[in-house]
Amino acid sequence: MTGSHARGAREVVEELFRRQREADESVLDDLVATDMVNHAAGPQGREGLRAILRTIEVDLGPTELEQHHLIGDGDLVVQHVTLHGTHRASTMPLLAGVPAAGRSAAWAFIHIWRVADGMLVEHWACRDDLGLLEQLRPS
Image 1 (cartoon, rainbow, N blue to C red):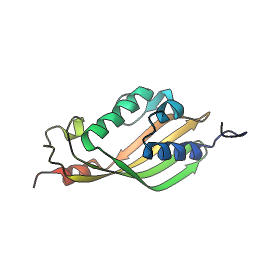
Image 2 (image 1 turned 60 degrees about the vertical axis):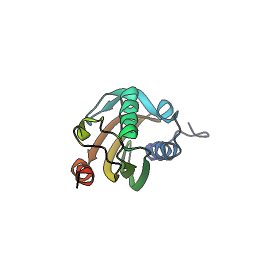
Image 3 (image 1 turned 60 degrees about the horizontal axis):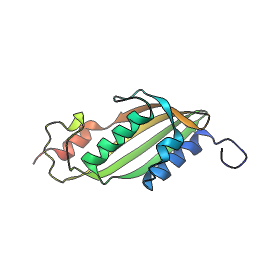
């Protein structure tokens, strides 16, 4: 709760974005349900999301998030973001076999979050994987 009222879904996602940009390592503990369902590929729950974000940071870090749109409708929030980083490793399956050459890259995402009781409980994602791979392809 924030003050004397429950936070709305949009406020929860706004806080997630702000705290991620500040590199607040406690943000997932505070805002993501332990059993969050990740409908996108990858591991489940809070710890699964933590592992995904760590892998992205290893491969493309240090990263910076840019938010373009944030749209809320009831318990659902749609977030359009671009992750900016530098290709330093290829540990995620998407980058398997792509040599890390230190190239800058921008990776676009659309996230859909469902919020219940002030916590992120479900997640869907659409990523521009082809656009990322095109940027990292050897010349």
